[in-house]
Amino acid sequence: MLNRLTAIGNLTRDPELKKVSDSMCVCKFSIAINNVIKKSVVYLDVECWNKTAINCNKFLNKGSSVSIDGRLELNQWQGKNGEKRSKIYCVADLVHFLRSDSKQETSVEQNYNNTSPTENIIDEEDEDEVPF
Image (cartoon, rainbow, N blue to C red; front, side, top):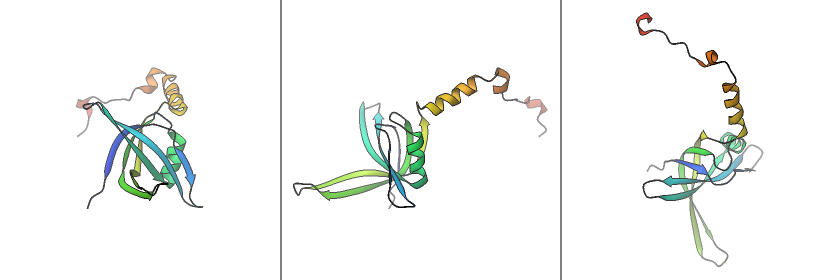
């Protein structure tokens, strides 16, 4: 059987990092996945572990756009009234940071914009001069 999920969405809240043991930690957040054709939204809870968790907590915040690669898990429990409850969530193996409104990204853009125009140009050779 194959259980893989790839999704792109925006964080609906800031990530929460929790230490599970001396060598393990988990980061939990949720994303909103927009379907522009049906004009609907799917909300998905995501958790990631260890170094991925630390980086997500450090660099992501509410509104950040991410791509998630992982697997779906099912959590089952009994509610206070004895009713059976369940929830599907994603355990992310990879989290790609797509777009963020964080201070770090702004400072990188400012440093790039403050350089002279000639520093930003990549030298391109004429196709006739390429020796192969």
